[in-house]
Image (cartoon, rainbow over all chains, first blue to last red):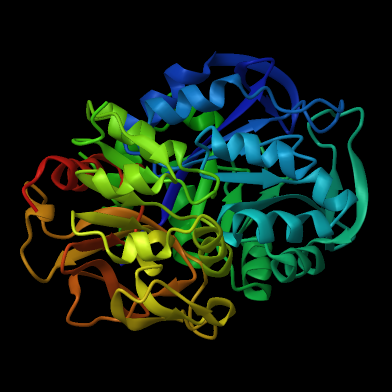
Amino acid sequence: MLTKRIIPCLDVKDGRVVKGTQFRNHRDVGDILDLAKRYADEGADELVFYDITASSDGRVVDKSWVGQIARLINIPFCVAGGIRILEDARIILNDGADKISVNSPALERPEFITELAETFGTQCVVVGIDSREEDSTYKVFQYTGDEHKTVKSKFDTVEWAQKVESLGAGEIVLNCMNNDGMQQGYDLKQLTKVQAAITIPLIASGGAGHEENFLEAFKNTKISGALAASVFHSGQIAIPDLKLYLKNQGIEMRLSH
Amino acid sequence: MSTKSEIVIIDSGCANVASVLYALERLGHTATLTSDVNFIQNATKVILPGVGSARTAMTQLHERGLIDTIQNLTQPVMGICLGMQLLFQHSEEFDTNMLNIIPANIVKFNKDTDIVPHMGWNNVSVKTSSPLFQNLTQDSYFYFVHSYLAPVGDYTIGECAYGNKFSAVVKHKNFYGCQFHPERSGEAGATILQNFIEGNL
């Protein structure tokens, strides 16, 4: 059976791993390589490295660590942040990343998703969607790496999710901004709605605070994986304990220990 | 300079072959990434990686003049992911003729019933014992990412299920293939690579 994936996300700013609350007030939580190795050894199913500053101030993600990560760990990883042209993606994939994730650049120029899929294959194209509930619907936000530059895009979340699938995305990471950093659980209602609209894998992001939050997300929605950051970085949730708990609760999990 | 005793990774022009090189490095082996016919023919073990679409990969093998070379290799060859699918006759992906080494066809997952790509960790059950599976636990998990599959056939030595059963590991004469990415499949994947490189296949 295909297992559900537990995915630590390492938000990277200026070469360090950081985490903020509701996308704000970023604080330092550690070295990229140390954390990557720790999570791979602990049984993480995949890692996401997301340069949260890149898209909003026009920089390309600092790539020097991509090759170092690829040498170090033996699980898949995805790199996100400011990938605007095919060449950016090519360098990151050549350095050993398994997937690249695009967010704001895809909103600026949706056909970029198709160019990436045609060049590198659908399987390595992830689209990140930052979504917030507004007037009882869900809206996609852009440039969320910097609170001063964050703007609402013209897209409705469900409509955008369907569009990115048709353009060639192989996976969607849905970050539910209302829940992010609140540790009150994933946005099950929104995840259910978006997964029902697409046939590619959906990864939940934003809101994990307790082991039960992962269980309720996997039990009540069809998501393929759950992403979290601060609960793992702080040690609040240990990945081996989480995976054992979920497996004992009947969720398909890969236990590596 | 002797070109014998080399592990060769065929450079088919696809991105993302670094992770295979690094996985071998972690096992203490060096490999040469090349599209040079002579090097490939003289290698002790040959790895055919593949990421991207079937058509692009076949076009690149044609352009590099590697079709006959690969078809006629007699040493152990391992195709990884798309590289495994390339060993087959034909793929539904863009209606592509493949290397035609294994007499069967690659087909699409059923998108009506399954979330596609089949992406993530799934368990593989060993159907036929092979030196490739030495020191491996039955039902070990491996990392898969694919939208097309090789149906189960005589050539299937390891099976996986997603919707229906499909080939996770294949063997046909001196040709082996893994649908999953051993280079990204933790300890279990490393064991498969080590068995391929160090084993007497």
